[in-house]
Image (cartoon, rainbow, N blue to C red; front, side):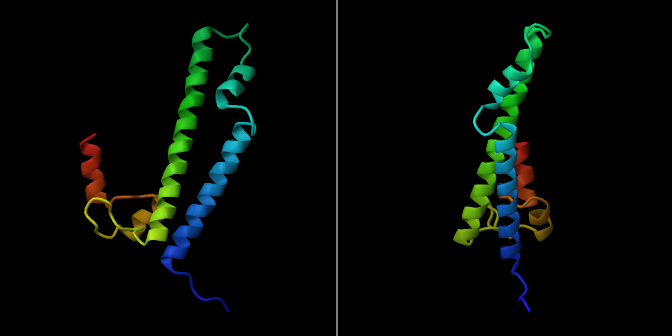
Length: 122
């Protein structure tokens, strides 16, 4: 009979699973060796598409790459906070982040109040 996992163990498993899935998706989408921009260039035959369309496709590929990189950084930062014992504490005010928020968004660094304030100041 296994012992129940702590909430921290559950979050850690979820974060590790997310990181693994993201890394697998990145490897698959990039073909393992080729950058997204190069893949986009190979996929689009210049004779049938305008330069503007090709440029848009490349920009989309770069944006996706940036988003995935940011997501990976967020996951790694959450795992570091777990190891340090600060996971689930708001980085601004120190209050415990609601478990519902962490379940929905395991990389959350702020409580809802501080997140709302941070977004208003952007």
